[in-house]
Image 1 (spheres, rainbow, N blue to C red):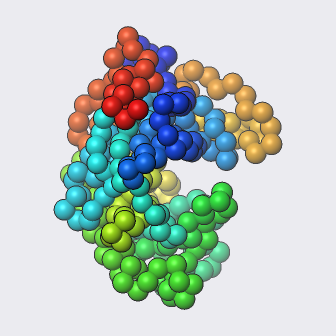
Image 2 (image 1 turned 60 degrees about the horizontal axis):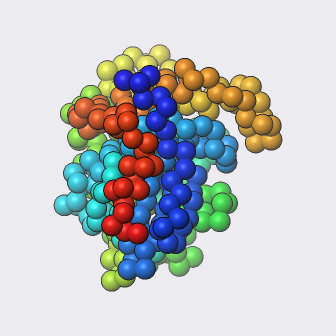
Image 3 (image 1 turned 90 degrees about the vertical axis):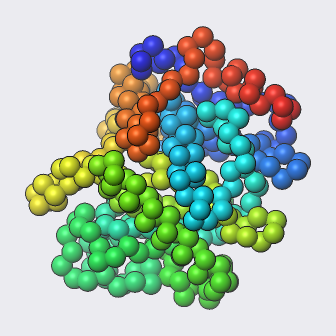
Length: 319
């Protein structure tokens, strides 16, 4: 299936007939005059602040995985979704995105400078307004889930860690907004963990993005519990890996990132041509992730119609 559809990738979703264009690293967005936003997930894969390649099915997997979770959590909090006119497209309410990104974590894991494992290894025990006990090992489950909020860098800057006190002191959120965000985030995460466990998966951590609608309600935006916004481990194999001090088995999508980093300075050098087999391996991981997370069979696009042509046809009513 992968080889038959390897030529079907959505590198670019420029549609001149749609207004208010904004092209992100992965998604192409269009703002309609009536307050709706059309979000098209391309197959672009981004790392090192640049686009590395296009992975077949990636945009469809992310859109449909998020759809699965938006529908499964609609009773917990409102979300931005209005319609799904195409497998790669969601139409949502345009929101004023809140300046705090919410990450919920239940394990001592992560590799970035703001991850709790990185900070813990430096000797830090107080972080993000919480205190972690001594003696935790990498990838160990925490005593209870925690929220690790960061600033939302709208201008391409770096996210910075925040505590609840700093969020309120800086006026980033009101006390009521912070209480609502926290309640929503913990409830969404608990639902995600419970449903993931039924599928043999551990939802380790995830990020949420919220915004305000015109009525001032807090609304869940962006994506939810996708393999790009969340860390999943396979439950089978976790204990053995943890006891051995190794990394638990997971959906490893970093083939392309690692391959590039091993061959050049990706922040300065030209990106070498990435082998087709590596692209297909990554596509296979995304498809497997979709099928395991949702317990649904992945439906590939029709082989005889380019993806952008299909999207244009399905969005014609919005022109």
